[in-house]
Image 1 (cartoon, rainbow, N blue to C red):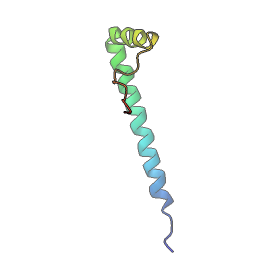
Image 2: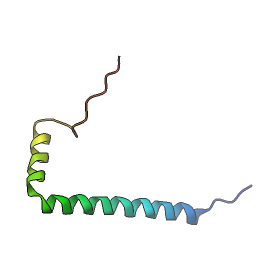
Image 3: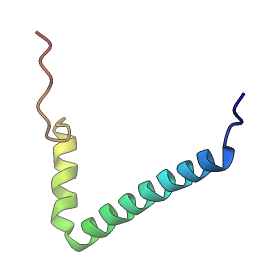
Image 4: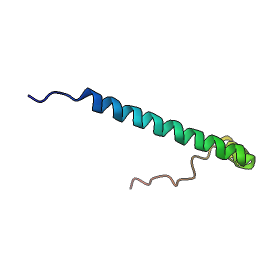
Length: 59
């Protein structure tokens, strides 16, 4: 029976975590550079709009 490669799995989790952190830092920097975008995003959420995607129609 094959042995599980825990080191590989751990590395994949670490890479995914790093990717998420970089994405968050990028979004945060973008909002810092463009304060108008942050206000627009907050207004959209207050109005109940989601991420601008059309709802799925399940016909």
